[in-house]
Image (cartoon, rainbow, N blue to C red; front, side):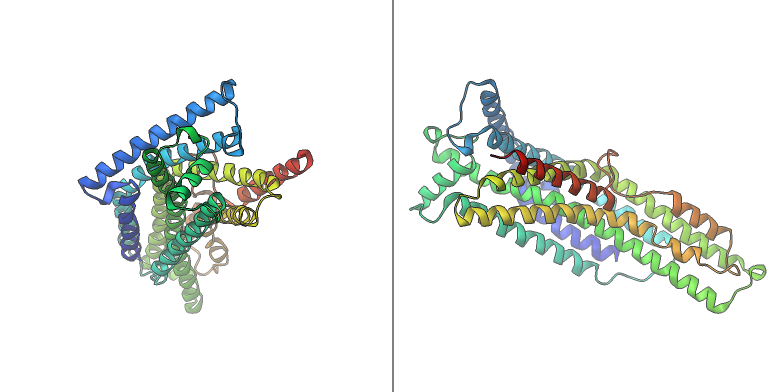
Length: 390
């Protein structure tokens, strides 16, 4: 299971060299990453400068694409891509060390646990699904910006850049040498945005898969002992040692989650803050576009659906770690008195009080309860918009 998971993850991470993360690339990939980093810094600096101008009153906006909301959103979008590039680079660079710990956990367990033969298929399916949905959503965003009557290819590019990046580039500042790099950077920024969420989901799936195998082994061990009707007074050392190995396997698994959280925590924080902001933004814009074309309404509905689904997917995938880390407790508590021993008692205590899960740098843990709290906050935000919108 670990080897299949590691190979699949390595294959996925190998393709990230084209998005500016050269961990699994060579010198050319590193040069490409540095160029992208510099260009993103320049674009972000320009977006911040334009935002400062409108906040200070020096500049006034003449269209929705140059409004305060548009400039703030553009600044946040490229700030997210810049930070995401650094954090994803940092996480993938640590993946080799993490995968070694992952493999070491299974080899040191000494348990004959079952293998999750479907984990590779699950990872491929989720990666494909996220990629296809992101591509479809982005195509609709381009169609909503350009329309169907843009003329030539250069005219379509000009229309798209001035509408989607009006917060940083006005019509009299437009130049083809600016438009092409901005077009490329916008696509890479979108990829990085989806990649950071995908990384969290895939890592959570791997951890949950390992926990599910341990839980299955625990359940089968209890059933086997119940069928044999072991006598507590005749319990052998080998029997107690088996439970000791199982308890230590859970302890090592919890340690692995904390190690993963150390490297993934900043990315979790960035992902959740960014998703929350843009979901609220799409809700705000959705109220104001009812008079626009059908393609704009379709795009905003599709975009809001995809943003919400992806954000929920991130939280639910990570929340499953907390759920599966304690899923064996009902089986352990139902263990018969004839087979109950000190190691079972220690394992119950360990699973009860040892809370493991992914967090945003210890500021919050990703759980189902936190998802409901965020949904409630977003609904309150929408109701306020509906109440005060004119």
